[in-house]
Image (cartoon, rainbow, N blue to C red; front, side):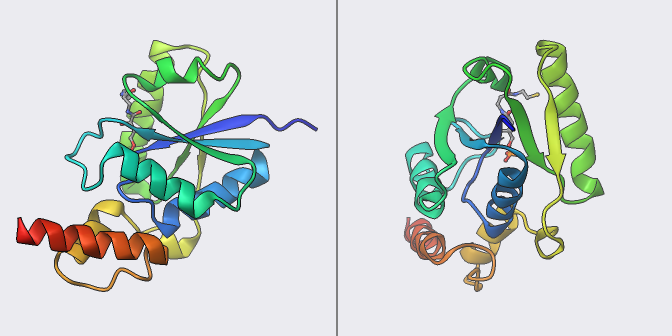
Length: 165
Ligand code: PNS
């Protein structure tokens, strides 16, 4: 049975174990998953678009059904490249709901055919948020439980650079 394509958009600044958990869950439901890193996240990113894409590729290289791309502008416009695909988003807690609800309904207002599918991450990642991981790294805390080792190294290095600047 063809299970279709899902596009998983986000800032991924940087990718965390929570994102990877959602990718694994998405692959149970969809044949193909495209992780789409947004070019201009709402908050000033710690990593450039190229770095965020590179890191996503590194940590998903073993997943043949996953590709990593980036997009600028509106998500609805980017989605036109994948007719019939749905948007995949993670819902960690009730606190996520309002923003996700507004975003998916706004997207549907912009393109009536666009559907968003929400999946729940594993309980152990429900609290995980890239912005908090960055804050912990910035303040010298251990983030090895939150991100894969290669991302951990890059985070420590980037935070060191920022502190020096
Ligand atoms: O990981 P994030 O920051 O929660 O992801 C948010 C993202 C990238 C999915 C959202 O900001 C987005 O789709 N941005 C693209 C611009 C756009 O379409 N904005 C209108 C959304 S209703």
